[in-house]
Structures are given as C-alpha cells and as structure tokens.
Length: 121
Image (tube, rainbow, N blue to C red):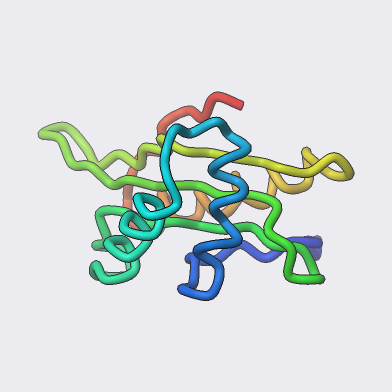
C-alpha cells in the first residue's frame, strides 16, 4: 500500500514549522528551547546507533502532520525505543498519520533490534 505520508528525520528547514505541532501538544517549551533540542538531535550521530531521533510526518504537499521524538535506551535486558513525544495534528486523516508514524517506528525498532515502548495515543 502506498502511503499518503512520508516519515523521515527532521531537517533544519522543518524545525520552526514543527514547533507548531509541539506547541499544539501543549508541550511547555519555548521556541529557543525547541531549536536547541533539534540542533542537538541533528548534530548527533545518525542511523541505528543514534540515541535520539526526531521524526516528522508530512503529506504530499509538504505540510507537517505528525512528529515523534524517539529515544533509544539500553538496559541490561534489552534495547528499548521510547517515544516521549508523539503528536498527530490533522482533522482529515488522523488514523492515516498515526499509521504512517507507527509503521516507521516499528521499522526503526526492528532495524535496531529494539523493543518499541507502547505509545499512548
């Protein structure tokens, strides 16, 4: 099935636009703090070994409809992907955005050999 959405790591060009999603989620953060968080994530190592990733979900027109902050943590038992920030902001296709994000998160967990923490939606 072809998805109507593209989920990928956030780019520098998307940082300020993604703040609207963070703000809508009632995350108590200022734009300067958000920019610093994004800068830290973007500057860190990419790929399977990355300890944090910011994923954005955009539609075919480039509008951001979802966002996830993913943290990889290893404990003595297993590798776990935790999703402390999960935002879906759309009226038209909330389930489609959730599904696109969920599939990307499951693929990340599988590639890294991690367990994905349940996401409260």
